[in-house]
Each structure stands twice: as C-alpha cells, then as structure tokens.
Length: 201
Image (cartoon, rainbow, N blue to C red; front, side, top):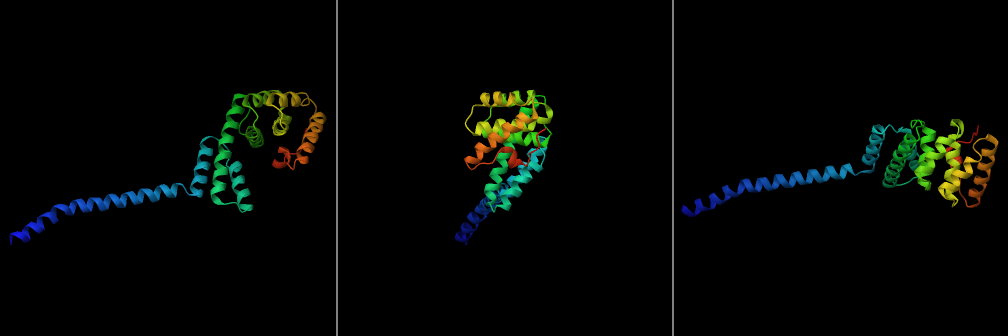
C-alpha cells in the first residue's frame, strides 16, 4: 500500500510541471509562427505601405514597384525587398525636398529625386538643383543630373552642367537628348524614359 502511495505522490507533484512545459512549448510555437508570418513577403509589403502612409509617401509609388515585379514574374521575396529599398529612397527623397523647401507631395518630383539618390547623386547637389531650377523644369533637371552621375560624372559637375542649360527649355531638351544618347550606347534608358516623363517646358 505504501509503495503505491509513493508512486502516486511524485506523479501528482510532476503533473503541474509537465503541464507548464507543454504550455510553454505551445506558446513558443505560436510565437515562432507569428514571427514567420510577419516575415512573409506580403506582410513586408504591407508594412512598407503602412510606413509610407506615415511618412506621407504616395502609395502608388510603391504599388507600381509591386506591379512591375509581378508583371516580370519576379519572386515575391525579391519584390518585397525592392519595395523596402524603394521606400527607403522615397523617404530620403522627401527629406531632401523638404530641406530644399519644395513640395514633397509631388509624385513626379519625389520619384525622380529618389531615382537620383539611388544613382548616387549627393543630397546637397539635389538640394542645389531643386532650388535653382524653374518649377516647370525641376523634374527634368533632376533626372538629367541623375543620368550624368550614372554616366560617371560627379554630383557637383552634373549640377553645374544642368544649371547651365536649365534656363532654356531648348537647351535643356538638347542636353537631355545628348545624355540619353550616351546612355543608349551602353544599353541603358534615361531616367525620363524610364518614368515616362518626356515633356520639357
């Protein structure tokens, strides 16, 4: 009788510990699953869109990146990474435009400024050309600066060259044509061609 009692007591003592261990394991599994869900490509894209909204970045500038990737059959993970990288550039572009005292909600200007930053144009150079270019030629001027840097010129040299042409629509158009021609020789499109902005006023 005593031996039976001894067997029952340890079992009763261990039961809560086993239950707690099982509960902890279930909780850990649930947490792991939640973390994995948070890292899915769609969740990352959704998070980027939410961050864009908080930063007053138009959602369309990220949604176009998603649509582009899907149209090309790009893997979802790569699309999510591209969207996150684009958001980073757009936030930097918005900050740059704000420093230049220019409306950061203009989608074309915001997109082209982000392209310029991605091309390697310095923030100070972008602020300079943004402030000096007439409003109706600002987007085009920024795009040409980006393309000149893509061709190997320094940010300061690119701004100086564009600044010399930005006062005239015809001079700016000629410079764009020259730069676009050089890019095509290397199998590249100009920033204006890529964004669909072709009108120079």
